Length: 338
Image 1 (cartoon, helix red, strand yellow):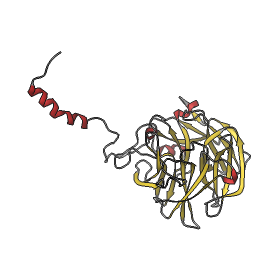
Image 2 (image 1 turned 120 degrees about the horizontal axis):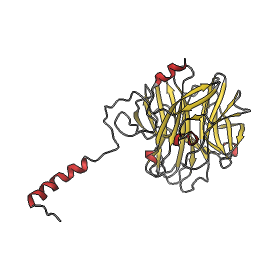
Image 3 (image 1 turned 30 degrees about the vertical axis):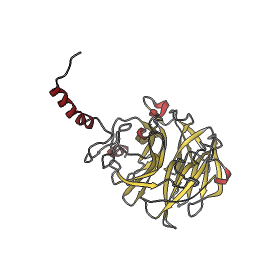
Image 4 (image 1 turned 90 degrees about the vertical axis):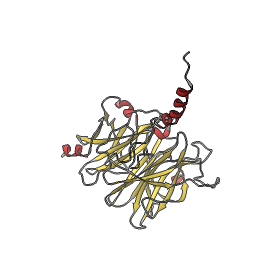
């Protein structure tokens, strides 16, 4: 075995710290500017840190988009983050919008689960209202509650209001939808995820009203609801834990139904597994007719922080939404649909 001279050994030890520093990191150059979407690739904010906003949704306020999502460590959840953007490609970290409580007896005590946060604006109360799926600390998925928080600003901080089971029903994966008349709705998985339900919210958006109906019973979760051409579309996934599965889309002319199945909207390689992802939200693009972005998470249960984002354009063929894989794309894609 070769031996090193004392001088060579000293030089090696001197260089060792530099070699450690030179190892790859999860940060990209802060000045890197995105000009397109690259589904499944690492996505950095404007500070050069990985975007940490899983199971999220997006709210447009004026000309600024706000992206809310779960802040994930390797295995733990750490609250709800919020990012802002003018162009949808480049996102500025605005901070933690909703922070877990230090009180171990609190509903959102550190160690609880706050999943799939969505935020809508109530013009009457002038408040930003966040709903999320809440599981209490140390209880696994037993609680199955909807949690509500409010803020005077889109960036927060949000103040926790309450949690409950809407009209006594279990509430897990969920979404929010505001119709053209300003009425807001909570769409959620119930009865151990075997039922998908829709409840109209109170005028202040803080509770569910008794107008609560089952849309269909088919063991579905991850609802993403949107409207175009006078019709409502609802994309959901199957229930296979962290593992991806086949998506489906339903259509209705009324939110209360009946809802008709249209099959799987995903096309292309690995379509039957939704490209390895799971739906979370369908984002309308401001200023563009019939332009929607399908948002999904490619969950990584071994390192939840590294769960990747799949943002893909929604296309329409014969009034049926279709989502195909693209390695990279930008918003000019929607010009081709005109």
